[in-house]
Length: 447
Image 1: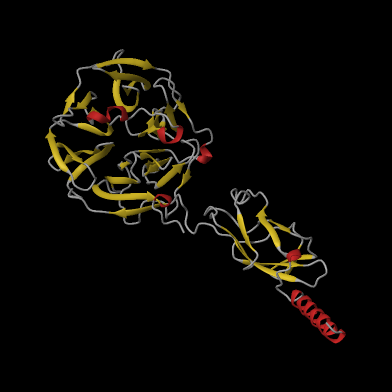
Image 2: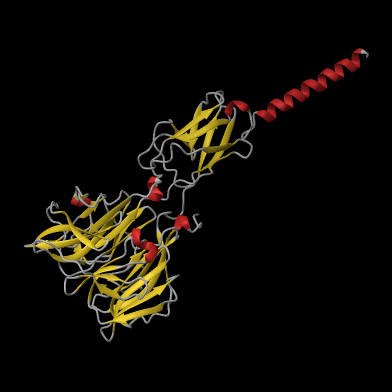
Protein backbone atom coordinates (compact mmCIF):
# COMPACT_ATOMS: atom_id res chain seq x y z
CA UNK A 1 0.00 0.00 0.00
CA UNK A 2 1.51 3.39 -0.97
CA UNK A 3 1.81 6.33 1.44
CA UNK A 4 -1.10 8.31 -0.07
CA UNK A 5 -3.54 5.40 0.46
CA UNK A 6 -2.33 4.90 4.05
CA UNK A 7 -2.84 8.60 4.76
CA UNK A 8 -6.36 8.52 3.29
CA UNK A 9 -7.32 5.48 5.39
CA UNK A 10 -6.10 7.12 8.63
CA UNK A 11 -7.98 10.33 7.82
CA UNK A 12 -11.24 8.47 7.25
CA UNK A 13 -10.91 6.57 10.52
CA UNK A 14 -10.15 9.74 12.47
CA UNK A 15 -13.12 11.58 11.04
CA UNK A 16 -15.35 8.60 11.87
CA UNK A 17 -14.22 8.60 15.51
CA UNK A 18 -14.79 12.33 15.75
CA UNK A 19 -18.34 11.93 14.40
CA UNK A 20 -19.10 9.15 16.90
CA UNK A 21 -17.86 11.34 19.74
CA UNK A 22 -20.12 14.20 18.66
CA UNK A 23 -23.11 11.87 18.46
CA UNK A 24 -22.36 10.52 21.94
CA UNK A 25 -22.51 14.00 23.45
CA UNK A 26 -26.00 14.78 22.21
CA UNK A 27 -28.88 15.10 24.74
CA UNK A 28 -30.61 11.76 25.25
CA UNK A 29 -27.47 9.75 24.67
CA UNK A 30 -27.46 6.14 25.77
CA UNK A 31 -24.00 6.67 27.25
CA UNK A 32 -23.58 4.04 29.97
CA UNK A 33 -22.27 6.52 32.53
CA UNK A 34 -25.59 8.37 32.88
CA UNK A 35 -27.97 5.45 32.77
CA UNK A 36 -30.09 4.62 35.82
CA UNK A 37 -29.23 1.16 37.11
CA UNK A 38 -31.93 0.81 39.81
CA UNK A 39 -34.95 2.69 41.10
CA UNK A 40 -36.99 2.26 44.29
CA UNK A 41 -38.44 4.23 47.20
CA UNK A 42 -37.59 4.73 50.85
CA UNK A 43 -39.80 3.12 53.48
CA UNK A 44 -42.99 5.12 53.98
CA UNK A 45 -45.87 4.89 56.44
CA UNK A 46 -48.04 6.66 53.85
CA UNK A 47 -47.50 3.78 51.41
CA UNK A 48 -46.47 0.69 53.37
CA UNK A 49 -45.96 -1.48 50.28
CA UNK A 50 -43.91 0.99 48.23
CA UNK A 51 -40.51 -0.02 49.62
CA UNK A 52 -40.92 -3.67 48.67
CA UNK A 53 -42.32 -2.96 45.21
CA UNK A 54 -40.04 -3.72 42.26
CA UNK A 55 -39.60 -1.03 39.60
CA UNK A 56 -38.51 -1.82 36.06
CA UNK A 57 -35.83 0.46 34.55
CA UNK A 58 -36.03 0.39 30.74
CA UNK A 59 -32.87 2.21 29.59
CA UNK A 60 -33.69 1.77 25.91
CA UNK A 61 -37.08 3.50 26.04
CA UNK A 62 -36.19 5.68 29.03
CA UNK A 63 -39.14 4.63 31.18
CA UNK A 64 -39.43 3.44 34.79
CA UNK A 65 -42.55 1.70 36.14
CA UNK A 66 -43.83 -0.95 38.56
CA UNK A 67 -45.57 -4.10 37.34
CA UNK A 68 -47.37 -4.92 40.61
CA UNK A 69 -49.75 -2.08 41.43
CA UNK A 70 -49.57 -0.37 44.80
CA UNK A 71 -52.58 -0.37 47.12
CA UNK A 72 -55.46 1.96 46.33
CA UNK A 73 -55.13 3.54 49.78
CA UNK A 74 -51.43 4.46 49.37
CA UNK A 75 -50.65 8.19 49.61
CA UNK A 76 -48.06 9.05 46.95
CA UNK A 77 -47.86 12.79 47.58
CA UNK A 78 -44.80 12.65 49.83
CA UNK A 79 -42.38 9.91 48.77
CA UNK A 80 -38.60 9.79 48.51
CA UNK A 81 -37.19 8.01 45.43
CA UNK A 82 -33.93 6.06 45.64
CA UNK A 83 -31.98 6.39 42.38
CA UNK A 84 -28.82 4.47 41.50
CA UNK A 85 -26.72 5.16 38.39
CA UNK A 86 -23.82 3.31 36.77
CA UNK A 87 -21.66 6.40 37.41
CA UNK A 88 -22.11 9.24 39.85
CA UNK A 89 -24.17 11.97 38.17
CA UNK A 90 -23.56 15.67 38.50
CA UNK A 91 -27.21 16.39 39.08
CA UNK A 92 -30.67 14.81 39.28
CA UNK A 93 -33.77 16.76 38.34
CA UNK A 94 -37.44 16.05 38.81
CA UNK A 95 -39.71 17.83 36.34
CA UNK A 96 -36.77 20.09 35.43
CA UNK A 97 -36.16 21.15 39.05
CA UNK A 98 -32.92 20.16 40.72
CA UNK A 99 -33.46 17.47 43.35
CA UNK A 100 -31.14 16.69 46.29
CA UNK A 101 -32.16 12.99 46.65
CA UNK A 102 -33.41 13.72 50.18
CA UNK A 103 -36.60 15.76 49.89
CA UNK A 104 -39.90 13.98 49.36
CA UNK A 105 -41.75 14.57 46.12
CA UNK A 106 -45.25 14.05 44.80
CA UNK A 107 -45.25 10.96 42.58
CA UNK A 108 -49.03 10.66 42.20
CA UNK A 109 -48.68 11.44 38.50
CA UNK A 110 -46.02 10.45 35.95
CA UNK A 111 -42.97 12.69 36.22
CA UNK A 112 -39.70 13.37 34.40
CA UNK A 113 -36.49 12.25 36.09
CA UNK A 114 -33.37 13.77 34.52
CA UNK A 115 -29.80 12.50 34.98
CA UNK A 116 -26.91 14.86 34.15
CA UNK A 117 -23.42 13.40 33.65
CA UNK A 118 -20.52 14.44 35.84
CA UNK A 119 -19.00 16.54 33.00
CA UNK A 120 -22.44 18.05 32.31
CA UNK A 121 -22.21 17.02 28.67
CA UNK A 122 -24.71 14.19 28.66
CA UNK A 123 -28.35 14.41 29.78
CA UNK A 124 -30.89 11.56 29.93
CA UNK A 125 -34.59 12.01 30.64
CA UNK A 126 -36.69 9.15 32.07
CA UNK A 127 -40.47 9.03 32.42
CA UNK A 128 -41.36 7.54 35.82
CA UNK A 129 -44.84 6.15 36.41
CA UNK A 130 -45.87 4.84 39.84
CA UNK A 131 -48.87 2.60 39.29
CA UNK A 132 -51.45 1.92 41.97
CA UNK A 133 -54.92 0.39 41.90
CA UNK A 134 -57.59 2.77 40.63
CA UNK A 135 -60.19 1.25 42.92
CA UNK A 136 -60.10 -0.10 46.47
CA UNK A 137 -59.65 -3.87 46.14
CA UNK A 138 -61.54 -4.37 49.42
CA UNK A 139 -64.54 -2.29 48.37
CA UNK A 140 -67.86 -4.10 48.14
CA UNK A 141 -69.95 -3.60 45.04
CA UNK A 142 -73.64 -4.44 45.31
CA UNK A 143 -76.19 -5.63 42.79
CA UNK A 144 -79.92 -5.93 43.44
CA UNK A 145 -81.80 -8.89 42.06
CA UNK A 146 -85.31 -10.28 42.11
CA UNK A 147 -86.61 -13.55 43.50
CA UNK A 148 -89.92 -15.37 43.50
CA UNK A 149 -90.52 -14.16 47.07
CA UNK A 150 -92.99 -11.26 47.44
CA UNK A 151 -91.16 -8.19 48.68
CA UNK A 152 -94.11 -7.16 50.85
CA UNK A 153 -95.44 -10.61 51.68
CA UNK A 154 -94.19 -10.95 55.24
CA UNK A 155 -94.42 -9.22 58.60
CA UNK A 156 -90.91 -10.32 59.51
CA UNK A 157 -88.27 -12.88 58.75
CA UNK A 158 -84.68 -13.98 58.85
CA UNK A 159 -82.46 -15.85 56.39
CA UNK A 160 -79.78 -18.28 57.51
CA UNK A 161 -77.27 -20.20 55.42
CA UNK A 162 -75.57 -23.58 55.31
CA UNK A 163 -73.22 -25.18 52.82
CA UNK A 164 -76.31 -26.65 51.16
CA UNK A 165 -78.39 -23.54 50.68
CA UNK A 166 -80.49 -20.85 52.31
CA UNK A 167 -83.24 -21.11 54.93
CA UNK A 168 -85.85 -18.38 55.46
CA UNK A 169 -88.01 -18.39 58.56
CA UNK A 170 -90.64 -15.67 58.62
CA UNK A 171 -94.10 -14.59 59.61
CA UNK A 172 -96.58 -14.17 56.78
CA UNK A 173 -99.45 -11.71 56.60
CA UNK A 174 -101.78 -14.17 58.33
CA UNK A 175 -99.32 -14.37 61.29
CA UNK A 176 -98.27 -17.93 60.41
CA UNK A 177 -94.66 -18.98 60.88
CA UNK A 178 -93.43 -20.08 57.47
CA UNK A 179 -90.24 -21.79 56.30
CA UNK A 180 -88.77 -21.50 52.80
CA UNK A 181 -85.61 -23.00 51.34
CA UNK A 182 -83.44 -22.08 48.36
CA UNK A 183 -80.31 -23.53 46.82
CA UNK A 184 -79.23 -20.33 45.09
CA UNK A 185 -81.00 -17.50 46.91
CA UNK A 186 -83.18 -16.71 43.88
CA UNK A 187 -85.74 -19.49 43.64
CA UNK A 188 -87.47 -20.25 46.95
CA UNK A 189 -89.70 -23.18 47.89
CA UNK A 190 -92.19 -23.08 50.75
CA UNK A 191 -91.64 -26.04 53.08
CA UNK A 192 -93.98 -25.49 56.02
CA UNK A 193 -96.29 -23.20 57.94
CA UNK A 194 -97.47 -23.40 61.53
CA UNK A 195 -98.94 -21.44 64.38
CA UNK A 196 -95.73 -21.49 66.42
CA UNK A 197 -94.73 -18.01 67.58
CA UNK A 198 -90.97 -17.33 67.54
CA UNK A 199 -88.70 -14.43 68.40
CA UNK A 200 -87.19 -14.20 64.91
CA UNK A 201 -84.11 -12.29 66.03
CA UNK A 202 -83.03 -15.31 68.09
CA UNK A 203 -82.97 -17.68 65.09
CA UNK A 204 -79.67 -19.51 64.82
CA UNK A 205 -78.23 -22.17 62.51
CA UNK A 206 -75.00 -23.72 63.80
CA UNK A 207 -72.15 -24.49 61.43
CA UNK A 208 -71.62 -27.88 63.03
CA UNK A 209 -75.23 -28.85 62.29
CA UNK A 210 -75.10 -27.89 58.63
CA UNK A 211 -75.47 -31.44 57.36
CA UNK A 212 -79.01 -31.54 58.74
CA UNK A 213 -79.83 -27.83 58.28
CA UNK A 214 -81.12 -27.68 61.83
CA UNK A 215 -82.24 -24.29 63.12
CA UNK A 216 -82.94 -23.13 66.67
CA UNK A 217 -85.05 -20.30 68.05
CA UNK A 218 -86.52 -18.95 71.27
CA UNK A 219 -90.31 -18.86 71.26
CA UNK A 220 -92.33 -15.94 72.52
CA UNK A 221 -93.13 -18.28 75.43
CA UNK A 222 -89.37 -18.29 76.31
CA UNK A 223 -89.03 -21.97 75.39
CA UNK A 224 -86.47 -23.55 73.06
CA UNK A 225 -87.71 -24.59 69.62
CA UNK A 226 -85.81 -26.76 67.15
CA UNK A 227 -86.65 -27.14 63.49
CA UNK A 228 -87.30 -30.71 62.35
CA UNK A 229 -84.96 -31.25 59.39
CA UNK A 230 -87.50 -33.51 57.66
CA UNK A 231 -90.72 -31.54 58.10
CA UNK A 232 -89.25 -28.03 58.51
CA UNK A 233 -91.60 -27.49 61.44
CA UNK A 234 -90.37 -25.89 64.66
CA UNK A 235 -91.01 -28.16 67.61
CA UNK A 236 -90.73 -27.28 71.28
CA UNK A 237 -87.75 -28.99 72.90
CA UNK A 238 -88.50 -31.04 75.99
CA UNK A 239 -85.89 -29.30 78.12
CA UNK A 240 -85.90 -26.82 80.96
CA UNK A 241 -83.37 -24.52 82.58
CA UNK A 242 -82.29 -24.83 86.19
CA UNK A 243 -82.17 -22.34 89.06
CA UNK A 244 -85.04 -20.17 87.83
CA UNK A 245 -83.33 -18.88 84.68
CA UNK A 246 -85.38 -17.67 81.69
CA UNK A 247 -84.23 -18.35 78.14
CA UNK A 248 -83.70 -15.16 76.09
CA UNK A 249 -81.42 -15.92 73.16
CA UNK A 250 -79.25 -18.40 71.27
CA UNK A 251 -75.77 -16.95 71.04
CA UNK A 252 -73.42 -19.41 69.39
CA UNK A 253 -71.97 -22.88 69.38
CA UNK A 254 -69.03 -24.89 70.58
CA UNK A 255 -68.25 -28.21 68.96
CA UNK A 256 -71.63 -30.06 69.04
CA UNK A 257 -73.16 -27.79 71.68
CA UNK A 258 -75.55 -24.92 71.04
CA UNK A 259 -75.05 -22.03 73.46
CA UNK A 260 -78.18 -20.66 75.11
CA UNK A 261 -78.38 -17.32 76.91
CA UNK A 262 -80.60 -17.15 79.97
CA UNK A 263 -81.28 -14.44 82.56
CA UNK A 264 -82.27 -14.35 86.22
CA UNK A 265 -82.68 -11.02 88.02
CA UNK A 266 -80.94 -9.32 85.07
CA UNK A 267 -77.90 -11.55 85.57
CA UNK A 268 -76.98 -13.59 82.47
CA UNK A 269 -75.74 -17.17 82.26
CA UNK A 270 -74.80 -19.47 79.40
CA UNK A 271 -76.32 -22.94 79.08
CA UNK A 272 -75.40 -25.60 76.57
CA UNK A 273 -77.81 -27.75 74.57
CA UNK A 274 -76.54 -31.07 73.20
CA UNK A 275 -78.16 -34.41 72.48
CA UNK A 276 -81.48 -33.42 74.00
CA UNK A 277 -80.17 -32.13 77.31
CA UNK A 278 -79.34 -28.73 78.75
CA UNK A 279 -76.65 -27.97 81.31
CA UNK A 280 -75.24 -24.82 82.85
CA UNK A 281 -71.90 -23.79 81.30
CA UNK A 282 -71.00 -20.52 83.00
CA UNK A 283 -72.39 -17.66 85.07
CA UNK A 284 -69.13 -15.70 84.86
CA UNK A 285 -69.92 -13.21 82.14
CA UNK A 286 -68.38 -9.73 81.75
CA UNK A 287 -70.22 -6.58 82.76
CA UNK A 288 -72.44 -5.14 80.07
CA UNK A 289 -73.14 -8.51 78.47
CA UNK A 290 -76.18 -8.39 76.13
CA UNK A 291 -79.20 -10.18 77.57
CA UNK A 292 -82.34 -9.24 75.65
CA UNK A 293 -82.22 -11.21 72.42
CA UNK A 294 -81.48 -8.30 70.07
CA UNK A 295 -77.73 -8.72 69.56
CA UNK A 296 -76.10 -9.46 66.22
CA UNK A 297 -74.63 -12.97 66.13
CA UNK A 298 -71.93 -14.39 63.92
CA UNK A 299 -70.11 -17.70 64.07
CA UNK A 300 -66.77 -17.52 62.31
CA UNK A 301 -65.01 -20.55 60.89
CA UNK A 302 -61.35 -19.63 60.65
CA UNK A 303 -60.27 -22.41 58.29
CA UNK A 304 -59.57 -19.77 55.61
CA UNK A 305 -57.26 -17.90 57.95
CA UNK A 306 -55.67 -20.43 60.27
CA UNK A 307 -55.76 -23.45 58.00
CA UNK A 308 -57.75 -25.43 60.53
CA UNK A 309 -61.36 -25.75 61.64
CA UNK A 310 -61.40 -23.33 64.56
CA UNK A 311 -64.61 -21.56 65.57
CA UNK A 312 -65.45 -18.37 67.36
CA UNK A 313 -68.86 -16.98 68.24
CA UNK A 314 -69.36 -13.21 68.21
CA UNK A 315 -72.08 -11.11 69.83
CA UNK A 316 -72.16 -7.57 68.48
CA UNK A 317 -74.15 -4.82 70.15
CA UNK A 318 -77.50 -5.63 71.70
CA UNK A 319 -79.02 -4.58 75.00
CA UNK A 320 -77.77 -5.22 78.51
CA UNK A 321 -79.49 -4.60 81.83
CA UNK A 322 -78.32 -0.97 81.72
CA UNK A 323 -78.81 0.00 78.06
CA UNK A 324 -77.52 -0.50 74.55
CA UNK A 325 -74.20 -2.30 74.16
CA UNK A 326 -71.11 -0.87 72.51
CA UNK A 327 -69.03 -3.99 72.36
CA UNK A 328 -68.05 -7.24 70.66
CA UNK A 329 -68.12 -10.31 72.87
CA UNK A 330 -66.28 -13.37 71.71
CA UNK A 331 -65.57 -16.90 72.89
CA UNK A 332 -63.78 -19.92 71.51
CA UNK A 333 -64.67 -22.60 74.05
CA UNK A 334 -68.20 -21.68 75.13
CA UNK A 335 -67.11 -20.76 78.65
CA UNK A 336 -64.86 -17.71 78.62
CA UNK A 337 -66.37 -14.61 77.02
CA UNK A 338 -64.58 -11.30 76.67
CA UNK A 339 -65.29 -7.89 75.16
CA UNK A 340 -62.58 -7.54 72.53
CA UNK A 341 -63.19 -3.79 72.22
CA UNK A 342 -60.55 -2.08 74.33
CA UNK A 343 -61.00 1.45 73.00
CA UNK A 344 -64.51 2.61 72.14
CA UNK A 345 -63.05 5.36 69.92
CA UNK A 346 -62.47 2.60 67.36
CA UNK A 347 -65.91 1.04 67.58
CA UNK A 348 -69.42 1.49 66.25
CA UNK A 349 -71.87 3.37 68.51
CA UNK A 350 -74.06 1.47 71.00
CA UNK A 351 -76.70 -0.32 68.93
CA UNK A 352 -79.18 -3.19 68.79
CA UNK A 353 -80.92 -5.25 66.10
CA UNK A 354 -77.93 -5.09 63.75
CA UNK A 355 -76.75 -7.89 61.48
CA UNK A 356 -73.24 -9.36 61.44
CA UNK A 357 -71.52 -11.46 58.79
CA UNK A 358 -68.00 -12.85 58.25
CA UNK A 359 -66.87 -12.26 54.65
CA UNK A 360 -63.55 -11.73 52.89
CA UNK A 361 -61.66 -12.25 56.18
CA UNK A 362 -63.57 -9.35 57.72
CA UNK A 363 -66.43 -8.89 60.13
CA UNK A 364 -69.22 -6.68 58.80
CA UNK A 365 -72.07 -5.05 60.71
CA UNK A 366 -75.05 -3.78 58.73
CA UNK A 367 -77.91 -1.69 60.04
CA UNK A 368 -79.01 -1.31 63.64
CA UNK A 369 -80.94 0.99 65.93
CA UNK A 370 -79.17 3.63 68.01
CA UNK A 371 -80.15 4.97 71.42
CA UNK A 372 -81.60 8.17 69.95
CA UNK A 373 -83.96 6.19 67.70
CA UNK A 374 -81.95 6.72 64.53
CA UNK A 375 -80.37 4.01 62.39
CA UNK A 376 -76.81 3.29 61.40
CA UNK A 377 -75.38 2.00 58.16
CA UNK A 378 -72.37 -0.30 58.10
CA UNK A 379 -69.00 -0.97 59.78
CA UNK A 380 -66.23 -3.47 59.17
CA UNK A 381 -63.30 -4.89 61.10
CA UNK A 382 -60.09 -6.31 59.64
CA UNK A 383 -58.77 -7.59 62.99
CA UNK A 384 -61.48 -9.99 64.18
CA UNK A 385 -63.54 -7.33 65.94
CA UNK A 386 -60.90 -5.41 67.93
CA UNK A 387 -61.32 -2.18 65.94
CA UNK A 388 -63.96 -0.93 63.52
CA UNK A 389 -64.30 1.72 60.84
CA UNK A 390 -67.45 3.02 59.18
CA UNK A 391 -68.03 1.86 55.64
CA UNK A 392 -67.82 4.56 53.01
CA UNK A 393 -70.81 5.41 50.83
CA UNK A 394 -69.31 3.29 48.04
CA UNK A 395 -68.74 0.31 50.35
CA UNK A 396 -72.10 0.47 52.11
CA UNK A 397 -75.45 -0.87 51.04
CA UNK A 398 -76.71 0.74 47.81
CA UNK A 399 -78.69 3.95 48.00
CA UNK A 400 -81.92 2.29 46.89
CA UNK A 401 -81.79 -0.16 49.82
CA UNK A 402 -84.57 0.73 52.26
CA UNK A 403 -83.48 -1.71 54.97
CA UNK A 404 -82.47 -0.24 58.34
CA UNK A 405 -82.38 -2.97 61.01
CA UNK A 406 -82.77 -6.70 61.59
CA UNK A 407 -81.23 -7.21 58.15
CA UNK A 408 -80.29 -10.74 57.09
CA UNK A 409 -76.66 -10.52 55.95
CA UNK A 410 -75.22 -13.94 55.13
CA UNK A 411 -72.27 -15.56 53.39
CA UNK A 412 -72.12 -19.15 52.23
CA UNK A 413 -68.67 -20.67 52.56
CA UNK A 414 -66.60 -20.76 49.36
CA UNK A 415 -69.00 -18.37 47.63
CA UNK A 416 -67.45 -15.15 46.30
CA UNK A 417 -70.57 -13.18 47.21
CA UNK A 418 -72.31 -12.21 50.41
CA UNK A 419 -76.05 -11.59 50.38
CA UNK A 420 -78.66 -9.34 51.92
CA UNK A 421 -82.10 -10.91 52.28
CA UNK A 422 -84.68 -8.54 53.69
CA UNK A 423 -85.05 -6.50 56.83
CA UNK A 424 -87.10 -3.72 58.39
CA UNK A 425 -87.34 -0.19 57.02
CA UNK A 426 -87.22 2.91 59.21
CA UNK A 427 -91.04 2.91 59.46
CA UNK A 428 -91.07 -0.67 60.77
CA UNK A 429 -92.20 -2.37 57.56
CA UNK A 430 -90.54 -5.65 56.63
CA UNK A 431 -89.32 -5.91 53.02
CA UNK A 432 -87.74 -8.88 51.32
CA UNK A 433 -85.25 -6.84 49.29
CA UNK A 434 -82.31 -8.83 47.93
CA UNK A 435 -78.75 -7.77 47.10
CA UNK A 436 -75.52 -9.58 46.45
CA UNK A 437 -72.18 -7.97 47.19
CA UNK A 438 -68.66 -8.85 46.14
CA UNK A 439 -65.25 -7.56 47.13
CA UNK A 440 -63.68 -6.05 44.01
CA UNK A 441 -60.53 -8.15 44.26
CA UNK A 442 -62.70 -11.25 43.96
CA UNK A 443 -64.31 -10.04 40.75
CA UNK A 444 -61.07 -9.72 38.77
CA UNK A 445 -61.76 -6.16 37.67
CA UNK A 446 -58.95 -4.42 39.54
CA UNK A 447 -57.46 -1.68 37.38
